[in-house]
Image (cartoon, rainbow, N blue to C red; front, side, top):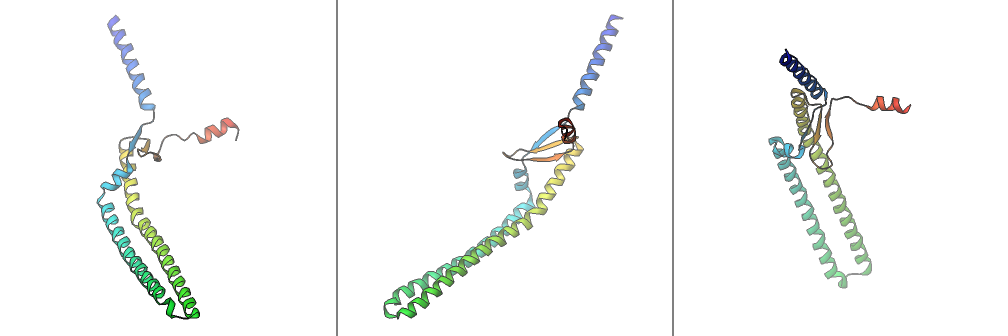
Length: 169
């Protein structure tokens, strides 16, 4: 009879401990950067982005070479030209410099726009997969393992309302 009581008490303690453990939120982590870099879609997007950067880079380099050549030409011919002609050439060079600078800025903006356009669906696909895996495994919180990474999935209890109530807000 004593052994039955001991077994019953041990069984009750086991059930209580198991219930306590199951009542706690489950937390997991994932290195999102590593996940994204392993996705074939990301590799294709990066290749497309690199190709675009190279195209813009070649165009900018050609414009810079043309500007340098014109500057050298004007510098070499400056002594044989009139003051008005040299001033006109200086204004032309300034206009070319401005045009090249604007093209560089526009190219950078286009590259950033294309990057966002290419990477957004890939990030969404990864996030959806993380959410599905977390739900299947009963995980309430998934944290990005990268330093400074944030919360990806949060299905656990949000304490904001309770804390506001406690503070009288």
